[in-house]
Image (cartoon, rainbow, N blue to C red; front, side, top):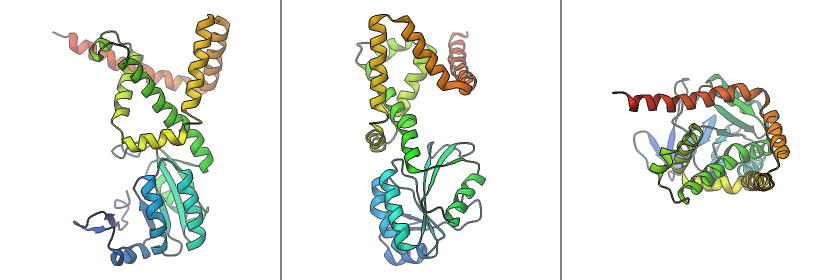
Length: 272
């Protein structure tokens, strides 16, 4: 995106080559970073915490540091201290999609550290590139992603673990699958192939707000079913429908699309 906008981009990696600087080449790094308006750290959170202070020392005044870490609290705390110490800005962003997915209309969370003009220019640049930018603080980010990431991943893990330990094979599962179970199996399988260190760090960061609430919901479901309390069941569903609210129509549209994909596949397999 930066190159397409006509910006000069200098890449740094573990090894040099093809125009890429080596991360341990301090002389070349200092020269490049000192003249950069934006320094992006496209590395895991732990590496960001290690390299952030080193790179901030090399950055010129009024430059903007940017990270893409999924777990934000420690990273934002680090940037807050470094921005004050080195008179720089920082934006901690969280693209809510895989790197291989086009950015157009995809959600990206942006956490500006100082609220300075340079930070907002960078956020505006991302917005102009087509991403749906949502500016918020670190507490809001962590509260939301505890649900949209940690709780979702926990639910997929629990579903797949339940299926795998049930005594049936995945082939038998497929023979009795419904559109809902097919969608869950597909998404759970995708979850198995994400970065394992990243997925565990997301679970650890969101455990108290995500997976623990998932456990509480399952306990509530168990209680309702054990007592066969129809009124409590209907009340729970009504509360959930109210929460979904105006998004219900769009969610049902997506669900219908998922169901139709299964029907189309069935028609193809049955065709002569």
